[in-house]
Length: 246
Length: 168
Image (cartoon, rainbow over the protein chains, first blue to last red):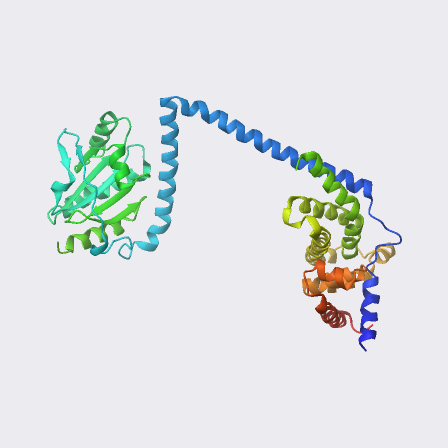
């Protein structure tokens, strides 16, 4: 029976033999192989040239301070926009519930202290704000997602000031007060805004904008929001930190 | 390895294996010229895969060739299912078309596309004349189990064929 089955299957499979004395055309195959290899080689070369072109174009861009600043700004805008998109996509899912980024009081680290001058030249020292909950926002005038958050911070400052909230804005604009002061006036920012520097930004790890920290009454970081978040999420965090016992 | 050596290697392998690889694929496909194209694709894939070179080259080439042929066959069959509706509105085939249909081959190919890939690979390579040892190397199977695998594959093929076309 097994032998018969083998034979039966073999007979069927024998139908697959290519017609007559068919043989693959070797010379056609060889020329096709060479052509394809040539094509792949050309593609690799083209990519190499494009990479070399990109490097050549970026070298002069990075060589001069003005063009370098422009490039940095472009990169920051891209990063900011991607954060905004991420925030937008996750906002609906998280707006109804308290933020999950709120750190337990026992696990919080101290917020790095700083002294920065505000728009009136008056120094603001973070450690002097102990006893208050501080909403510390790193932003810039060219950052579109930051602009979306600013009206919320104005509102939080007005609503929760009596409960002990202080909103602080740290601008990382390279153009300094000449860019920031008109912006403050135009957006009616009535909370304190300071001009930041690299050391403060680095101490907080604020590498993309906006980045916002919620600091509890003991000067410890209770929450970190990188990129734009939902207004409800911010507000829920603020209320919970305000309600905490010192 | 410089470009010249590389080229020598792939062309040496081409001369050693191209015809047989193309024949294996041509067994599976209706179109022999497509089989030649796929054989070149398999050789190019081999040249880009350092793990496939050296002693394993021959086994790797047969394995990948038969898989490439089966994949293409399944694509063809899916495509022809889609076209069957269109064909419904076409005029009846001419006697030449009927002769060209090669019904037997089409039936065997359809059954091969329907059974498990590993079983189809075994049957195709076996019908191409590979010994048990060669089959075991090409498909990474235990040489002692080849007989059992082959027997199961034949049984499955027969069952599937009869299910579709009746005992003949």
